[in-house]
Length: 182
Figure: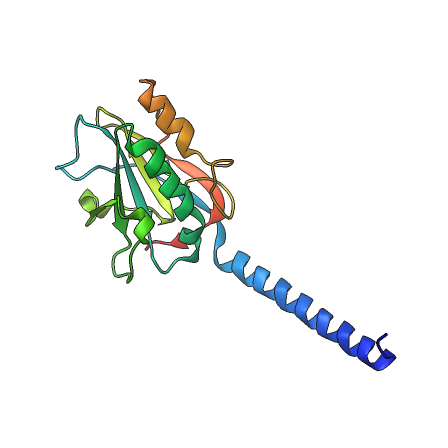
């Protein structure tokens, strides 16, 4: 049994720990949890990838952004599931950033940038072009702090495109974990 003095000390330590957790969560929400408008106007593939071809998914990432960690497993699952079905996967890294993608995402073909310097306002983000080379989707993987199959926007879009159904979701407003791109 703890003495009253130790109980008081333990209660104080637990209160301090609780306050530290709340402060860290508040800092995270203030720095990364935000609402972002993904405007697709003028977004195009590089000439070498433009036009008819496979469905193309371009992943926009910043290695220093902690929000990217939340979707890397999901992205690896997308590559495994849809790469064999003819979807090509590409990546654009935030200019000036250091680092790279983990080995599990080695199948992503790097792109220096998109034409006209177009890029997302925040990352992680993606763009999907259909087989005719038309932009089908531009925005986040999901809404929320992390991305999984349960809350993803991506699988329904890829499934529709693979079935030959048109998709036009070029701009998206979403709340989630994002880092500024610019």
